[in-house]
Image (cartoon, rainbow, N blue to C red):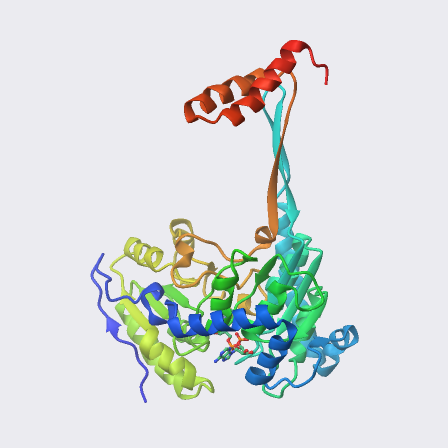
Length: 442
Ligand SMILES: NC(=O)c1ccc[n+]([C@@H]2O[C@H](COP(=O)([O-])OP(=O)(O)OC[C@H]3O[C@@H](n4cnc5c(N)ncnc54)[C@H](O)[C@@H]3O)[C@@H](O)[C@H]2O)c1
Ligand SMILES: N[C@H](CO)Cc1c[nH]c[nH+]1
Ligand SMILES: [Zn+2]
């Protein structure tokens, strides 16, 4: 079976056929999923922990009365892994933490005297508690813990709990649990999907309700986060993983094809887009992808994704390639050209960019590059960035006004309040001006 996407000869500026992820069915909210999630959340809120256990049993076959892993089990989770695997995970946890610490160091508290006696500023304060969802249904994605638990801890969040669904063998995946342990998690629960997010948000796990829920997952997970938003904060709503590549005639078609299929493996609706200034390269990549799919063990997922959500587009020059990509705003963007810096400078919309032949998305996916892999999908990169340490920090503002500065603020506030008809607001300023005139020494 051939999985080749259409090879598209696009003229400059005409790219209607290029499937923007935001236009794919996968990015749209599914009313059946929304209805199901709303019923589940309602039931869990009403029946509490009993309903959580009921869903854990029904959906994931969990039949033990307790869903928490003991501290000892969390600590010992690495024993089930090979030393090489442990070392690889330790590297990922450490690089992700160091990158998050770099970002934390760039966020410093600041203060300014805006007028004599008027001092204003802000200080970064971490949220009090975070619930991290670690998806582990189809694949046990270990690095999700580094990106959520580890980054929250680097931000200084005091309490971070995590939930993961049981794997195919009915147990919590030891590599995911070990990754959470390396990231500094406080408590781990074997709970999947909606019931996990509801239990953390409603405070059904022997903790107060968390302030924020984070982490990627399937359509039920994304919908539960959408519906719980407001009651708790969320990181972002991530859809199916995407990849896009800009390549020119100097690129290696085998590597480009491998990188496109690398993310197509996430799901049959994962978009993979190549924009190239070389038709020849585009044709070679299509041939290569077919060849590689023939021997890929996950071809049953990557094949349909490449066929149905893959695209190859010719851009007549690099300016056109940039315009196409900024419109697409992909989650991951690789640049494999003779002038990667030009693209880096010119591009504005992407979740994370991978510069040069030697950089590939999987390095970030698995924590080796240190950058966060929880990124906006479905065109969200037009307006948002991915998860980072700043999401867990609140820049709380303050102001201090001296007696001497009082007229500078109060008289203007009186004028504005008069215009707006806000008498009580005006009074707060007027009373202070009176105190000043009376010589109040405070
Ligand atoms: N964008 C990102 O940053 C990123 C990162 C990692 C993973 N992901 C995505 O996360 C997803 C992982 O999905 P997954 O399914 O493998 O694991 P998952 O952990 O997200 O979901 C498994 C849970 O789904 C629930 N569920 C399944 N069927 C249900 C139903 N009919 N009704 C209610 N709940 C149901 C079950 O409770 C189960 O525990 C993939 O789509 C992957 O692409 C995205
Ligand atoms: N590509 C996913 C979202 O960025 C993350 C991931 C982890 N493992 C494999 N992939
Ligand atoms: Zn991936």
